[in-house]
Length: 462
Image (cartoon, rainbow, N blue to C red; front, side, top):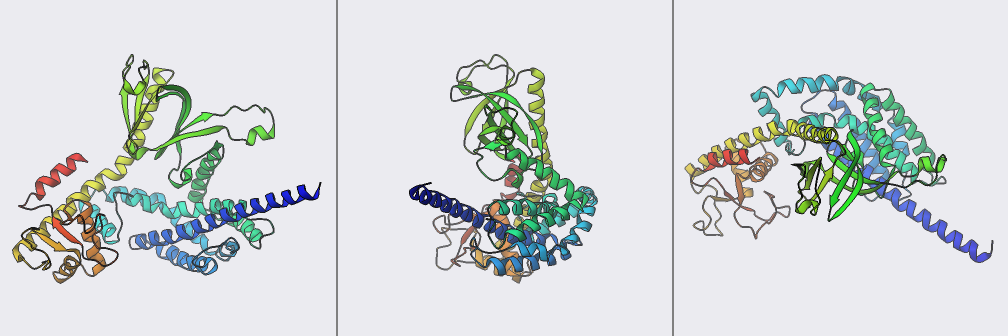
C-alpha cells in the first residue's frame, strides 16, 4: 500500500469515526430527553396508583445521575453505561408494577363504566396538565412497562455507535445484558420486550426507512400481504404491513445472493411510505369501477386509502374477495380499537368542560366588568378578558387552588372551543397564557348563551 493510499484510508476511517460519534450524540440526546419525559409521566401517574411513587423515586435519582454525567449538552465522549449498572438492583421494583398491570387495566375498564368516576379521572388528567384526547389513561398505565423494555433497545443502538476503544464501551456492553436480564425476570415486561424485539427485527430488514422507529408508536403487527397499488397512473405491486397505529408499504427487494449469510442479513424490502392510521380514511370500491383515483384503470376487489394529513389518495387491490374482506376487517378493527380507547373519554371531556364553561360564563355575566381590559374598548370586544386576570379570578372564587390549575383549566376551555382569542394578531397560537408573559386577550364563544347548542353540534361532528 502506497503512502497516498494509506493517507486516504486514514481519512476515510476518520470520517467514519466522526459519523459514528455524531450518531452517538443523537442516541445520548434521545436517552436524556425521553427520560425527562418519562419522569414527567410518572409524576402524573403517581397520584393515582400505588408503587408508582417508588418507581418515580428511582427514576428521579436515575435522571439526576444521567443529567450529571451528560450535563446540559451531551457530547460523544460522555459516559452513561455506569448509570444502568448502578441502578440494576433498583430496577427490580418494576416486578410488582408489571405483575399488577393486567389487573389494573381490568379495574380501570370497570371504573370507566361509572360516569362519576370517569369524570373524576378526567379532572385529575386535566389538572395534571394532560390532554386526554391525545393519550387515554390506559396508555399512561402501560408507559412504565414500555419504558423498562425500551432501555435495552437504546443501549443496543448506543453500543453500535460506540467505538470499541471508547471508555464507555465495556460498561454499555454490560448494561445491555443487565437491562435484558431485568426484563426477562419480569413476565409482563418480557412479553413486551419480545414484541418490541420482533418489530425491531422487522424494521432492520427495511432499506431506506423514514420517520420515527416502529417501536416508538406500535406494539404489534396486525396483518401483512402483497397488494396492487394504483397511484399517479402507476400500477405497482407492494407489500403492505398493518400495525396498531401505522400502515407501512414497501417494495420487495431483489435478492440475487441466495443461500448465503449475506443474503439472509440483507434488507428484504425497500421503504416506500407510511401512514398514521389516525389520519387514514378507507373507502370501499365496487368491482368494475374506474375513476380519477384509479387513473382510469378498472378496479376489482379494491378499496381507496386517503391520507388526510397530506390529502393524497391511492387504490389497493387484493387477489381475491376473501383477501379484500380480511384487509378491510383488519383496518376496521384497528380503527375501532382506537375509537374505543378515546371516544368515550373525548365526549366526557367535552361535556365536562362545556358544563364548567357555562357555569363560569354565568358567573362572569352576573358580575359584569369584574374581568376587564382597560386598554381596549370593551364595546368592540364583548365578553372578553385577559388570560392572566381570568386565572386570578378563578382562584378568588375558589374554582382552582393555584395559578397552574387555572392555566390548565383556561387551556382546556380554549382547546375545546368554549373560548377563543379575542385578538388573533396578539397570539396566533392556541396558548392561554403567552410564554413571554404578554397579555392574552380571550373571548367567550358562548355569547347569548349558545353554549349548549354548540356542545351538541361539536359532539355530533366528532
